[in-house]
Length: 159
Image 1 (spheres, rainbow, N blue to C red):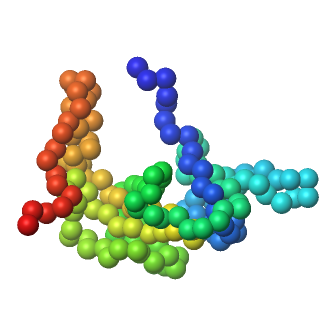
Image 2 (tube, rainbow, N blue to C red; image 1 turned 135 degrees about the horizontal axis):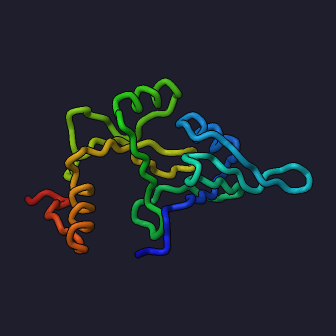
Image 3 (cartoon, rainbow, N blue to C red; image 1 turned 135 degrees about the vertical axis):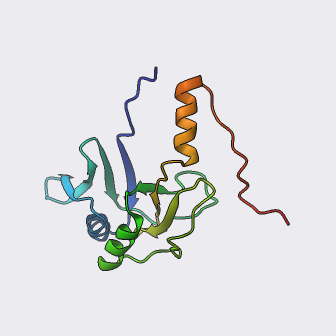
């Protein structure tokens, strides 16, 4: 039995704190707490995903995130029950997709998805999990047998 219950939070160092607060609010994660210096300037802001999971925004970053070959955090993934409604909500909020969205296309894991990026370039995957996706099937196998699953699903096509 693992001593951990769940992921608690993700901390992102951001260049423009207000732009990041606005972005995460637009995608549905309201600010619920800020810790400030004596002069009232925030040094950390908390954005609620659930009561037990949140994003911490830390101002003062330099440079740009999103380098897919760099060591470290590659992307966040947010799940949704209705990706088409979520894509429409993002469009209405003025948040562009960074990849095209084809509602008929499924990944090798059987899920549907698309991508956005926050003001600092942090990549955010939006995923609608299929009831028969490889992740859920592997979790069921893990619970049943205690063993990991390997699925042949090449990233690069042959040729």
